[in-house]
Length: 64
Ligand code: SF4
Image 1 (tube, rainbow, N blue to C red):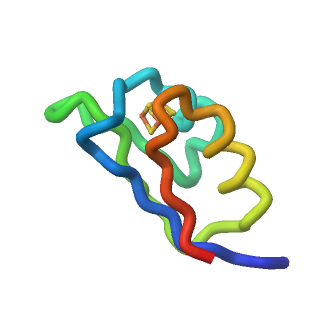
Image 2: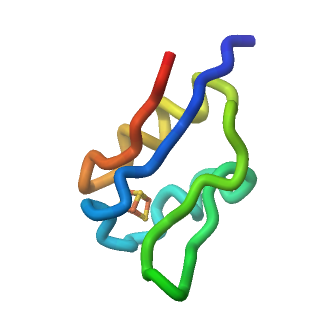
């Protein structure tokens, strides 16, 4: 299995929570700042790419 590092570009996150709903083992929601945060990195590449494709603001960065 391939693993990648994941990061969120916080300023562009609209807080839609799609990533948290798709992969709660990797993403969490910070209610203090109203943005998603990464709680597990590295993570499996297939999951990271799937979630990044769903992000409406294109703010999930994947480091191969
Ligand atoms: S899917 Fe993108 S915009 Fe939505 S909460 Fe996650 S990082 Fe933010």
